[in-house]
Image (cartoon, one colour):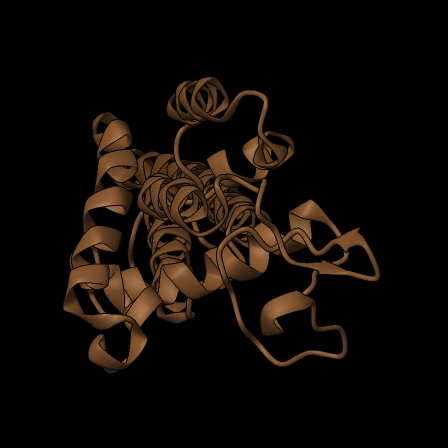
Length: 249
């Protein structure tokens, strides 16, 4: 009996070390796996951080990187659109400095009609400048010039030279022609200055018909400028030529 017991004790002692070795090996492998997992997770975090720092210059919190790019794009579009709106508002608040010219095709047709009407008269050389003005102003330039100077045949002069004043225009300047009329240096200057005055009368004072425009002849009192009969004759004659261009008004 004693021998058998001793044998059993020996076998038990011999088995114990083997179990400890197996447990130790299992612990070592589990530690290695844990280390690998932590290393992988650290690498992933580093990659995510570098991607964020490269692609997007600021942080949106917990939003995914792909959604951050879309959000940045939307914000940039909003900024650009807002800038364009503000620039349009600012430009619309600025006062207009230039008068809009009529469309080119209408301008050419009007010039053709004026040239046909004044052919052979001194005012013919002014046709391109007249046709370039507002159609109502252009019609008054032609009609008033017909009444006041027969389109330049009865013109004021200075030292025997043409003053280019075919409208009976009186404005005190350094050079004044016969009859107390203003003298101009060129046909273009004459048209530009007289057209500016007619523009003001038509647009600001609403003198947009020959009957209203009779103040060009009468001033404030038609009785003092030849009487009402002469004023009516002026309205009729100017109206006749003004209405020839009614298709362009």
